[in-house]
Image (spheres, rainbow, N blue to C red):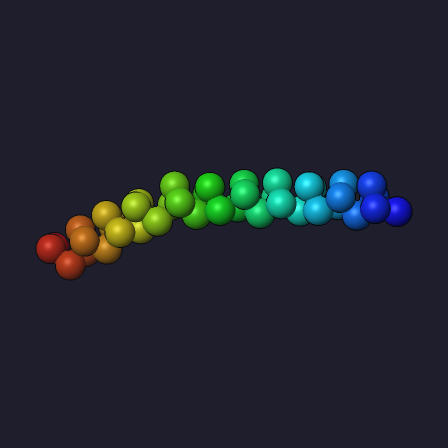
Length: 40
């Protein structure tokens, strides 16, 4: 049973990390576009 829980945790953590990495990639783009709008 513990192995099963550990397996699920590993999958969930992997998915969260993927989402987090995408957010980190996306945030600078959003900042740049907002700055561009403010300047324009």
